[in-house]
Length: 244
Image (cartoon, rainbow, N blue to C red; front, side, top):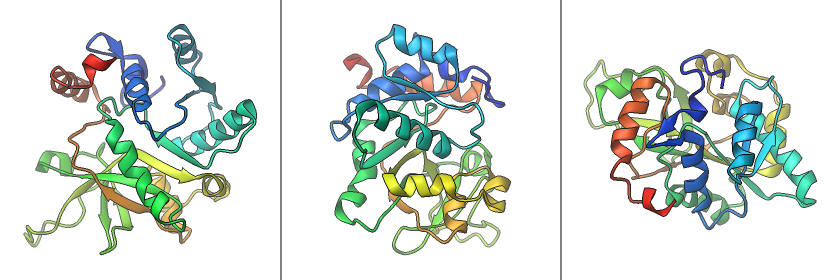
């Protein structure tokens, strides 16, 4: 609720329902997930969730990174259900256009390769405005689609007008293996992570890999009131809306 760019945004309404309601209901449509929880440090959000039959877990107000909050939430959930979680998926609460197929896409590399510890979705940036937007986290990858770097600045450079180089944005649907998420929480925050305000750079700076998966779904996060207006317009004809 204390977002510096858009205070109160988790409960801001999109087509009559708070944003986190859309994220929660759409995430629950992913059959690959066993449970979905809202992790929050705000009593206002907790109360809303309880009134609307949404699973919720309270976390510390001290977290600066969503991944750290997710680690705390996972441990609390494990104690509640008395069972270890194998994979936890961080779905940021400002992704109201999330599709259940995107969640499945993000988890599939882990099911195929036990060596993959964390995955991010990415999507193609469609305009120069998006490339310049500091609220859009850009990512470049190697030939095997492992992340090389994340930045809020335009990457790669366009100064030489090499048009065939793809330009991608991070989509914040991020599966972690349980033990790696616990390890992540213990890793010391890193200079690039703090400079860019991107969780995944802590992983790269400590020498671990982040697998990237390209999604074709056309979604947009909400970071500003302007984003909200754009997303609400796009969601008016969204096929999933009728299902919840």
